[in-house]
Length: 251
Image 1: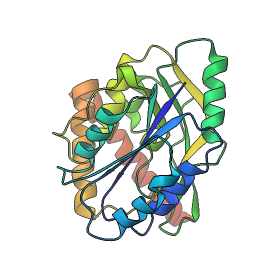
Image 2: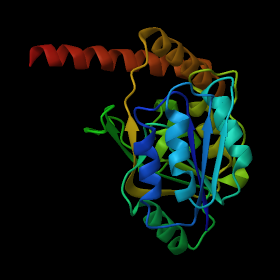
Image 3: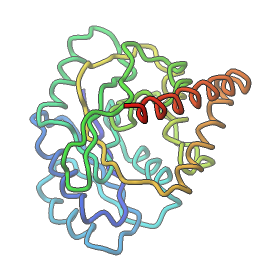
């Protein structure tokens, strides 16, 4: 069983080294490492090249792209492993044994697993933990689970390469959300690893980008789950949000 670990990066000199080191530290070595850079102008490329000779099965390209999801599609085209796993610049594999534990679970499963998933811990730009992600991964995950939001972080979502399709570049901010739904619709067997698989870098979206992202996600939900059910659920999301704020003020 082999893995294609893919890192997409652009001007990420401040944290790309931590990402690379988390990959290099894995006790399981049955993987290729693919880095797709968008033509960085800072020290990112220099840092990557410092590690080039230390990484077996390493693929690296640096060229302009049409955004993060275009870069991810380039990574998918280079991948030859049985499973693909995106650990982008600033994110990290959770521990040195994580990949080996995943491989062990695949070997013990006795079935052809399409997708593996797990929990995510959040970190700041210095690599310090900010605690676990607020949304906890459900015990069982299907394509319908995402009608309640992105319950599993993209960095803790590992997909068998043969069912993977390209990211839809019509979505500038939420193509990962839509991609996960498409992958789950094609999946025959989905495995909850019951492990924390990754650290996700909390890199603040601007208010404008966050608004655009939420709008795109709403459009994706309408597409897959129906407009009226999605509107009803969003009314409930709003009530829950404002009730939580009210409770917090009271405390």
